[in-house]
Length: 275
Image 1 (cartoon, rainbow, N blue to C red):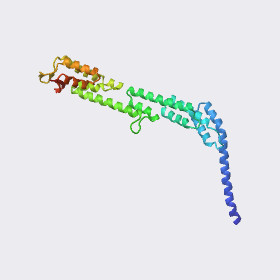
Image 2: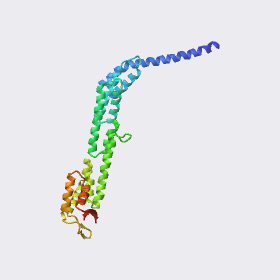
Image 3: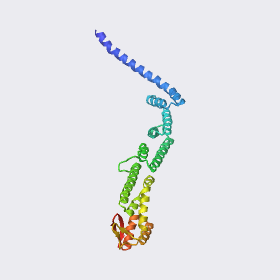
Image 4: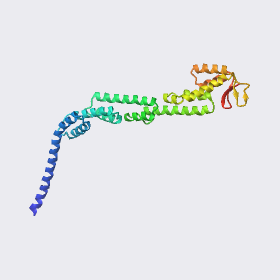
């Protein structure tokens, strides 16, 4: 019985070492097969298999193999395929891994930068066309959607967008109150092409309101003639001169009224200049 107890540990030790040797041998054989499988996947254009085999090959190379050029080649091909398919985020993520790897070269880093620039330009195009959400989605893969302190390009686009929307809403309220000069000032602050298009009808209504004031020959309130109104021709000339000097419409109106000895007052629904 004593002899049998001594033999059992040796048996299990031998079995364990045998299993380990078998596993190591199988892994070694698989590693030797991987280059061939890798080349076959490249030849038939199976980039998913190419990536899979190259990743396995890089993980299994315990014999001090050189730079995993096969892995870099597969990543490079797959990243380009994803880019052509407009799968921007996946392409950028894979290209970034390639650029940061030991096998990544200067050309790979330049390609990454080129794609980042392309996405920024495409995002700006979408933004100019009025699609803020699409622009922000394009900036996400390059980390320009949002940053602490609102320092990213995406934060800047949001600020421009919200400012233009606010000015259009403000102009609508002023037009409803027939405060034409203030309304045109708000409309002139809209500097985004898409928001300008949205404000086109409102601008026409505002300009018609201003032209109506200019053509009256005298200003009226809701009860009749204003006996001490500033002559509209003189007021208009003063306003236009100040606008030409760089003042905004409303500031020019206020300054012109004051220069003519008048005072800006609410005359019924209109804004008037009285002496």
